[in-house]
Image 1: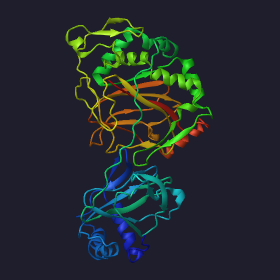
Image 2: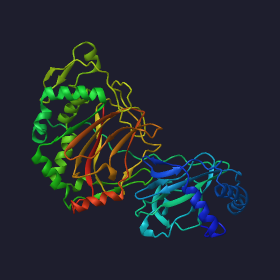
Image 3: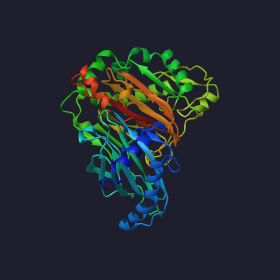
Image 4: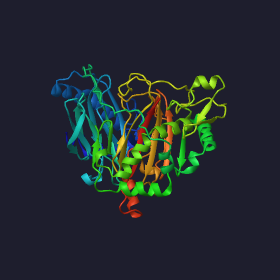
Length: 469
């Protein structure tokens, strides 16, 4: 940390004014929300050019001597504006050739309560971020720098005030360093269906979704769009019981990390009240596997018709009591979340791949979401053909501005293919392929406004399951 980095407050103020006059574009994805300038490498503004020259000349020589890192005489440099609820979540900055990161703060008087701190993480034995060990509060005309390495995890915490957190930042480059192999986490356990017959469906699910004509309509829509939202999915009294059970103080919630991949709470199943255990049994039941087959056209049960059956003109949609009924011919090609036509596939041997038995399986958990929670797209995230199921509870008056929605994107792209917003008693089904990634958007400070209407409701819950053919 270098205080009073720029000589003379007049220069720093003139630099700030030049930067504020630049064009900024809003950026928002799984990792960040902020406004950023274009690259300042060729900016003609005199004070910006003077800063760039100073960094590339005198400062670069000094920095190389202090750190004992051979640095090139060029830098990446840009300007960022963080305003209310903007954030940059946990990451390590590693990219080919980046060796030292720097940030120059040009902020008004700033307190820790304003948010926007630069938080530095310790790491565990797997080189994964563990906990925040230092928080640096932005300060006028202060420059911070750190080495980019496999353990340089940091974040910019959410800005909680209406002040503008203006900074100039970038990287000095040098020879790349070797990094350890990425740690592959143990995935959620996958299991075949458990033997519950159709009675469990009639106990829980809104009768309209058990009607075979309705199922045929749902399947037709799903095969056209690869996603569907089924509102009022559970019977009202069962949904009410579910919500009441979720409020139980007996439930043990565990934080799920690491912070460069996710931050939310998941329930320990052994601690759940019977109502919640029974609902999880429904989601894992043979009867629901068959119902999902009828909703989607995927082969999640042996009674579900295969592609070969349909090609032979023998398509049958099994009803949920184990019989079969005529199935409308499919005129539309099936479209997954990325828009490419699909045929059912077996998942490959990815880090989260199934056991290879060819038996349909599922994996899932009960999650609790509140301010500060999120998931990120990451390199080791498995990409395979799968059906995502999300069922939401406790979402009254939830605004998409709060975050907490599930976003689907094409691999390597920021543009959203599909957004699923939390909605009470709503079942969302989304089919994704190997080129489709997903994340849950950071839940920001605006979400606390909901306490005005619901004093005891700081977030919401979802049952998140994935089914594999």
